[in-house]
Length: 472
Ligand code: ARG
Image (cartoon, rainbow, N blue to C red; front, side, top):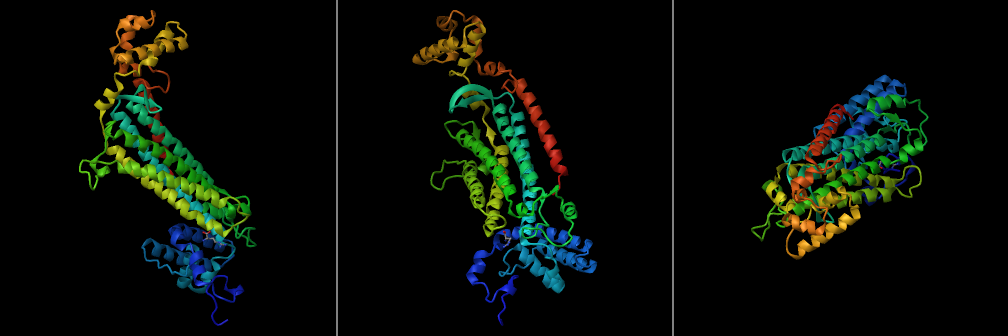
């Protein structure tokens, strides 16, 4: 053939690939961001080929030097992608061969793009999991500081979005701290899932060359080696784990943002967004909208979509590698990028918003949120709790009928409800008192919340220290 196709599989083919098929099959626009990982994996591979005598020491040197040059071009933004490069692996090898000549063709000895894309993706997933865990931990620090700054502020606690019992604002804020702490645990699990070195699996069955997989793992910072070459090139569980960790973290941010949207409304007025983290309306001059919180809430949907896309992508694929799997990266990158952006946005929004302590306190006082405490009081006097509940329920109904609240209840009102009520019961209904009495471990009593804050700070310090030394 005069017009030999310039594909790496040219030998077998008598026609060039259809132009549109080339474009259709290309993953370069998406996977070019794996350039750093790809070069790193290739340098480790080239070194190992030299050490094992699969290529000569001189050839290995040429390959690693050429790859270092490719890396420098990528880092300096000087790397020129050729639209004919199908993916990042082909682009790097093409450029390497331009630099070092035909010896560049030896780099792929014993290797396949199937194990190559697996190792690149795993290195990416490890770094992404670590960076997201760091960012979420920074947000946890912001939440802990917020809780610390406003210790003593009471607000209504809700169930069914109905006022339930007063709680400390700090207690409510720290609830999110623990959610995000669990997200970090999930990201760690995703990191561990990715920390398995697949190189050496080649296309699917392993290779005939006397490679050293342990040396590759050590060079690339992997904890373990994959045990089965077929599994190693077909496995994308680590991306599912990462996307799941991202999804749950987004779910948590979405719940926080939903509360902030409510709280910044005129109806609640609990917080005021900083001008730098809110937007106005192009028509209504008075408006100040919590766009950041709304967007984060909205973006949670696309991350769940990414997880679903990965699940559906992988289901039903026969072993081993299938081209379908090329679609994995867009979803994984999007889940990671979206969460990273949302964590940053929420961190800034929460750090700058004003907490309207007086509004929260006013909402926590009055009303009927001390009803449980009155029932608890009767139960403490030996009245079966179910009966106490009934008695206080009737008291609430009676007060409500005369437009009064528990705060207005006199000892006569209480006595009329039950003879068991003593003078001291009248003082039980203040929000501070209700909060103070909840001393069970993990409860909203101020001393308990201070202990909780200490525990939160301890986990923060431990995670920060772990992440400081972590390298990928
Ligand atoms: N671009 C491909 C991907 O992302 C790399 C692996 C290609 N392997 C193959 N046998 N076509 O999945």
